Image 1 (cartoon, helix red, strand yellow):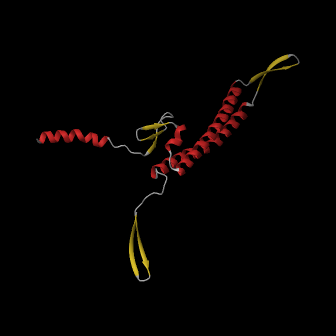
Image 2 (tube, one colour; image 1 turned 180 degrees about the vertical axis):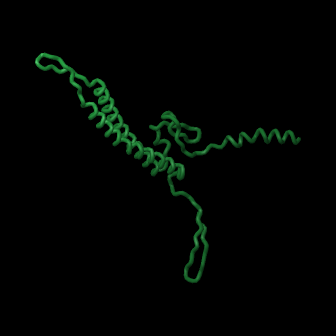
Image 3 (tube, one colour; image 1 turned 120 degrees about the horizontal axis):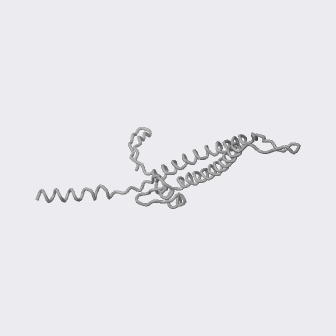
Length: 170
């Protein structure tokens, strides 16, 4: 009888311990599973399905906008850097003077690299802000998933005139 109860207890324990799913939201490792909520995985474009809290949804919209702006500045900057480096590597051009051909070094490539670095530098703060807003959105959603007021229990000491009271609010 003891062996039977012990075997039954050991077989039920994994079911109880692994059957618990939390509704907390966390980040995934790729764009296909960007948000993970319990067993469900959502893409980044499905953030309106994931966030039910209006404040968290507002943070997520800011993160999306900042991410888009940072990607635009990064792409423009990368294009300028790539074009400037290619122009600097292939910097000799042929010039003709009185019918004689000679090679002239062109120094305009570093200017384009500098302009590209400036665009990338402008995009970096937007990317950082996007990450911070994304973390705020997830934290806000996990703290208050329903979107209403958070229910917390508190004690309060009430002193009025010549009486003292202790109130418990939940």
